[in-house]
Image 1 (cartoon, rainbow, N blue to C red):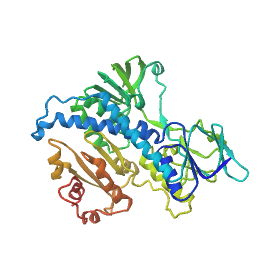
Image 2: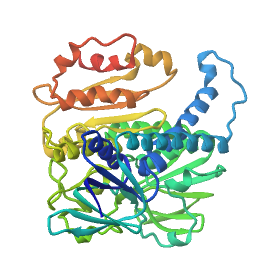
Image 3: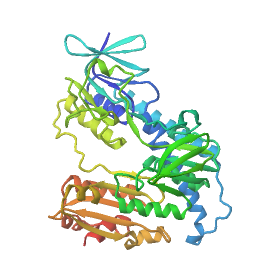
Image 4: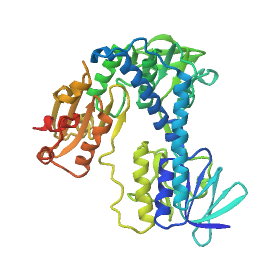
Length: 450
């Protein structure tokens, strides 16, 4: 039987980060992955969608080149080549992860790992294939899976999830997207740019639940202008082939789409790897952990989507770093969720971090809003002809920055500035005392606060 200091089940962002950090710390480490290193994020989520969206962005830019006094007529694209490029990017990054595992002495095992319980001396017993393994510490990083709601007729329909949509070799003439969250909106953006007629159905009263509602509404308005049809507050009551039945206020009607994309969220994977042999305390639909990512079972940790708390790759990475530091006996203050950025890679981009107005109002807390159009940035105007955008910063009573929300390019790159400010408890005056390079879109933070 092979014995290790650390065993990790799941090779997604949490798993491969934990393995790399553990190996670098001198801990003998084994990593189990049943599919492909990189997990959903690298193979079916974050990276492939952003690769497709960048092709769409380039196509959109070429189509609007005349705004910048540049001639570029008859713009076209080749979808199979876009998909092939996406696959090439994914393959390259997977190879990079594999190389990192090798560099840090991590033993990577391909196959379905199954926890067999604890031995008499407290180690964790794991089986994979014909081999048995023993580990002093276990980190569970099994990730999440697409939620398939019990909609009548759905099981008989040929619907897409993100997996199938990412492999599409032909564009559907029309697409009905069930779910207006981050994944749904990013696919709506891509297919809209490629010329598909897009319909987005959302059960709630606004898209992108949990993000700033005012900016979400503005993004929806932008995409309505681009031709996307939104059905807010509508419940899907049935699917019949390529038809989707909707209901709102006791009124029903039907949408037809060449393809139906299901995007109503994800849930932690808690079955199929012997978790019941350890019986850790659960919280909602995931495993309960403390600030060091340790479960109720001694020497067993859980990181990433499996906790059901923040189903984001960057959260998973930070959680894995905290867990390995704790296992290695290094000083760590534990995991902080005060400033977890959320980004929607639409065109324009939308990003937020920290508190939202809706959250603060629900909690009855006092706050101040500093809001300014992105057009107050000279560079934004220069690079976004006729583009709209908003920078909203939320301050506490003592003017500490507690939230920031951006609509406009490149929000995904700028939001980290606000995230650092929130995590470190920086006040408005402290941030404005910093020198921002000019001209940059990032100056918008300073402009909003002065």
